Length: 105
Image 1 (cartoon, rainbow, N blue to C red):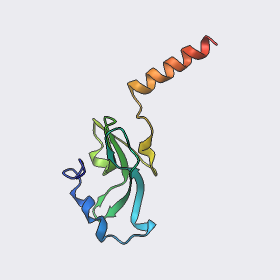
Image 2: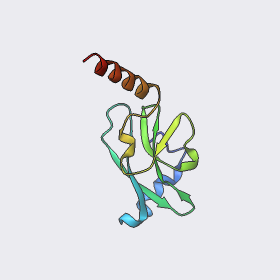
Image 3: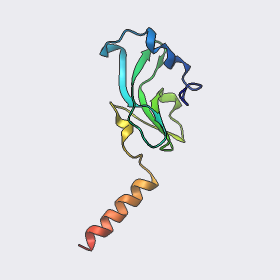
Image 4: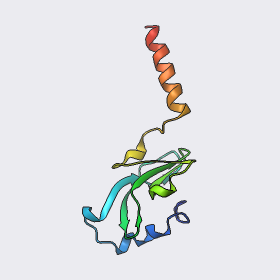
């Protein structure tokens, strides 16, 4: 059971959608927890586009409708784009520490 099931119950229609690339929008990582290697092909469901990859506080990743991309859910567009670290305090800290390290070399 996927944590996004209550949010996007239409994801279960995937088995009824013809499996050709034209019927899908993106490939996203789909997981709960830190070990995120499973991928999911996001289906195009008439009337409810699932057109973004989502990350919820770095603990869960899946496909998402753009209208549901509201904090704490961050979204991106493109194949497997939700594999990267989300922008925010963690990225700012990484950039700052990187800059300081470079200055002292």
